[in-house]
Image 1 (cartoon, rainbow, N blue to C red):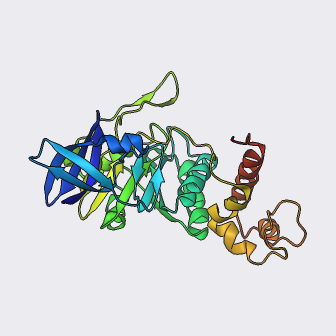
Image 2 (cartoon, rainbow, N blue to C red; image 1 turned 90 degrees about the vertical axis):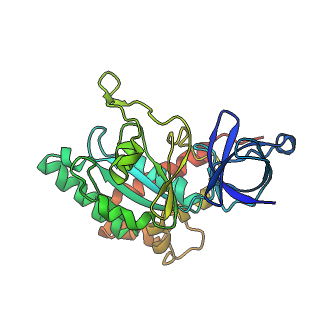
Image 3 (cartoon, one colour; image 1 turned 90 degrees about the horizontal axis):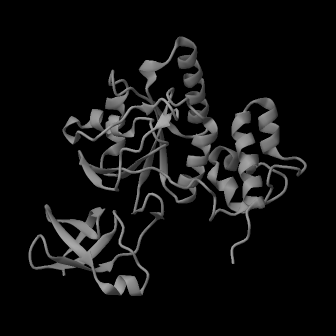
Length: 293
């Protein structure tokens, strides 16, 4: 049986890329029975008489999956955040980073709209960028208008399945259009009434970009930590995790424990204080979460 990768899911059809062809498939009833829903990014076994009448027979094991947006087998997430319009938010970025780290997806931080920043805003964004670089992240400063940083992003996409994700209005589609003008993805301006972007991406689709595949997704509709436990959070902050190896007590949550290396690093400025504040906020959020039955 032939095998391929689902590159688009729309209106009950799955578009499978195999041997340089795209075959339109439906899922067999066995998936509904077993509560398995094929996702974009899935490696599948299928059968087809022609390119319009195929059926997916088997979904291969996934290395990871995201529920919202619904996509599987992601290598990395390009977290797109604007410098302004909407304003850059470290709290929201850290929330995205935690969700991505928990799903074992490599994050790359891409800050857009640098051409719109004032001198003071530009300096502030550069300061944040250096903080996140010291925390172990790749950070790129870009502009879809001036094409600043666009060439630097290309090598990171090579041979990878990448998700472009971020809050509405930050310029995900504009960034993809700058990377490949042939895409001509629809973009909308910021809503002046709401002060936030309008959703312009309606479905998940993998798009060929050089030797890689990228997905312009509708964005994370849920940013809650429903699956993450308190003991997991430490590992979702790589900078805090690295420093925690020096804590006196194993399993230190870095809140009230004595001789905590993380708290000491905050006091000396070795770790950004705002990252630690977000860590504490998220920890409390998980602690206050209602138990599931």
